[in-house]
Amino acid sequence: MVFKLSVLLLTPLLSGLLIYLIPKGKESSFKLLLAFAGAYLFAITVIHILPDLFRSRLDLKFTGLAVLAGFFLQQLLEYFTSGVEHGHMHTHQHRSKQDHVSHSHSSQGKSLSAMVLLFALCVHAFLEGAMLAKPAIIGSFYNINAILLGIALHRAPAAFALMTVLSHQLRSRIKALPHLLVFSLAAPLGLLFSTYLVNQEILSADGLLYVYALASGNFLHISTTIVFEGSPDHRFNAQRMSMTLIGTLAAVAVEFIM
Image (cartoon, rainbow, N blue to C red):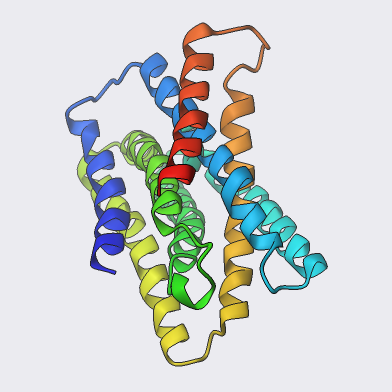
């Protein structure tokens, strides 16, 4: 439990703080990191999470519906985050420039926008943490280390993107720090909350499996978005393709080794 909490807390926190060391990080390097993370998350979802779900004791139709619900929940959340959870750093910057048209409301508008962005990101992070509770009660198939690594890999660039967006939007890195802390706490709180519900027998093993299915739908949306948005003009990029293959092979290796 302590290890999981530490990874969930420190990965986004330290990644977000990198903005002080890399204030203008190379976009090309950032995209390569995203390619690796997206490919790993997609591969681990396809070769591990989904097969495990569909061979669990849950009804297959309801399992599929839960996965679909998670997919479209993430689609809904992205209307508020504009893709920060998979590394987009520019949409909110553009909106913040438009806020200057109305000077009397710009400060309130930016604060409200930052809170909406943070809330939407925290909903997703909370759900990710919740799926990691009590794997033993679900079954031996639950590879906690592979999934934890996948969560960490995509939360790292998400945290960096969040700090980049909010530092620009709020015009202050100091003002953005509390938002980073809240975002970093969301997944650990999700883990603690779901563990408490399981321990108190409020959340059953089947209920936890449905949380697992919901989160897997989230993963499908995020990972496929990262992979397919990487080359919107459909041009071949050898570096990006290489990182995608490495991320995929890493997921396969983790699946067979752990």
